[in-house]
Amino acid sequence: MASNERLGVAIVGLGGAVATTAVAGMELLRRGRVDTRGLPLADVKGLGLVEYDALTFGGWDLFDEDLAKAARNHAVLTEAQLAAVTPTLERMRPWAAASNPRFCKNIVDTTAKKARSLREQVQAIREDLTRFKKDEKLDRVVVVNLASTEKSVDLTRPQFATPESFEKALDANDADIGPAMLYAYAAIVDGVPFANFTPSVAADVPALLALARRTGAPVAGKDGKTGQTLLKTVLAPALRDRALHVDGWYSTNILGNRDGEALNDPASKQNKLDTKGAALDSILGYKVQDHIVQIQYYRPRGDNKEAWDNIDVTGFLGQPMQLKLNFLCKDSILAAPLVVELARTLDLARRRGEGGVIDALGCFFKAPMSRDGQPVEHAMAEQQRNLMTWLSKGRVPRTEPAPERIRG
Image 1 (cartoon, rainbow, N blue to C red):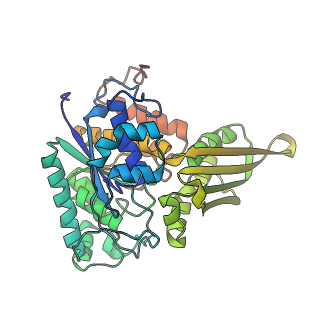
Image 2 (cartoon, helix red, strand yellow):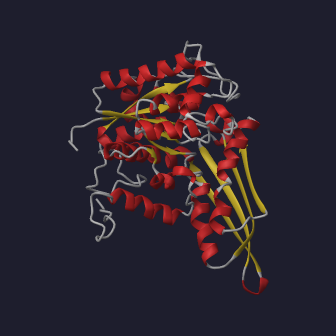
Image 3 (cartoon, helix red, strand yellow):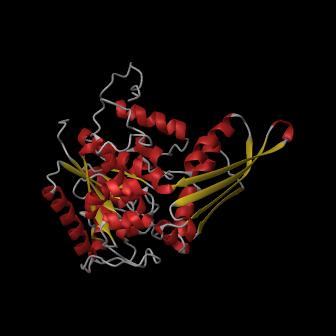
């Protein structure tokens, strides 16, 4: 891969906390103001991933403020960091976004696409991507969905079964097609890689998965695995391997950013709870009867999320024990690096000619997608091994070990 190639990262929700943190972080890295701590693949060399300074960002949002103002409102960056990147972020404004308040009630837009039909909205998104690539002189583009969580829909309905039925539903302005699906379709139909970092229904529509295989568009999702679920998928395998029976696992979260505000809507919250609760039973091999997951919007927290877990286990001789875990974190500081790595890995998949679901990227998600309905792996250690094996595919002979992680 030529060192001067440029990759465009088109983000749905460009003005959000995660996106502005990713854009600012790459600019700070480019200026030598920060190092690569927190970027999971920074130390993996020679496997064809684009360099971080090859990334160019753009995207859509329902709010039209420039990214400097958005980043200031989200209050993730330090004052010194914000000052260093303000000239760059001030020049960046989101494109008008697709909007449907039926799917996300608590986020009221200030700007949205004027197109009225679903087909017109899709065409406008495709034109945005074409213009982005041309104006920024990009070699390739990937799309990452970071928008607020939408309500769920029933994917067993016939309009979601095949690409042809989905096309007809688009033309009929089907009420069950939400904005996340429109972005996924607009990318996939043109062979553009698409990642869904949200719990919203997007590329996991059966019709769009089939379309991705046809067009060769790599896809991955869904719902980024950042804090609480990351630790859950690390701890649960250890408890399983030590034959400690999990009697109950109580998880609660409080957060006050725009994501928390969106999740204050019961329909959006339930979609998020479904992805957060999917992994535990799969890892343990039995159903935890008292697995409780809660999310509460608490405005004073802002982006400083608090995740608290109480775990009840039974060990040898039937003796009960407890684990208690309190994770205080900035959600966007955990999420933004994963978005960057997803863009780089999906681009690599596209250049390798791999289309459809990229199973090896499951480590980035709470509810990983699988190819052809195969069972998914949730345990973090195994997911990480799968990722490293996939990265080395075609570059290192099978008889050699996985690629060495080089410390810079």
